Image 1 (cartoon, helix red, strand yellow):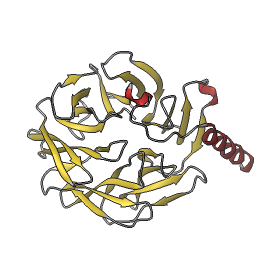
Image 2 (cartoon, rainbow, N blue to C red):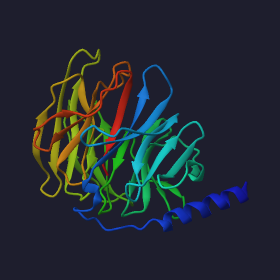
Image 3 (cartoon, rainbow, N blue to C red):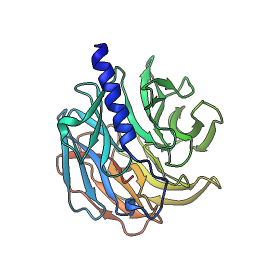
Length: 306
């Protein structure tokens, strides 16, 4: 076992140092947005990971199984995803064969992972004593530690590509609010809150300037709901746009394209997995709404363009 762990760490180290970490450049090849996402099959434990372009063309199948939460890692050739069947964190390079994927075994319930380029870590949520907390895995040492602590559920940690702020949702009373915190648990700040509406499954722009979040309310019997997409300027701490969503369900899993031109999101009702969910895009001001995927028996989850 010790020998196996040594080679796993050695392989991960090689993977990390083989990636050239470029600075944030708005005019880089990320402008040619490719969307990474996964789908859950209705009435099945199986999920599939795909990429697709911003116009809804070139759907590319990557893998299938008990997998979830793919994230971009150092460019458009490398991703990380969770393999729940084997309790592995999988580092995949599209330029090499799948049998050379690097796998790191994890012995805890990791969900909502995101890669932080500036901190060189993966931030994620996990259950601890029945409460969801946020944590980080240092990719240089593979050590895991919590980021602050709270008696409330903390989920969906996200970060930009340029700073060390970690944003997350925390449930106080009946709804989720958005906070940000530093890696060491200091400088806790409230960003968005509402006593009735939830701010959850949100994201932060690559350049750290904007936050985009669903703002939604769903009744207990799921017969009434109201939904918006909120674009929030982080520097001024002000709402730039609050865009009503009129469609099937509410807007969920919002994110921004790399150049902050488009919002990506899926439609659905939280905790209702019997109705298909699809990916939509719209301009940041709410104009030019376009449906990108047309699944009939799958639920699209968390589209990411960077």
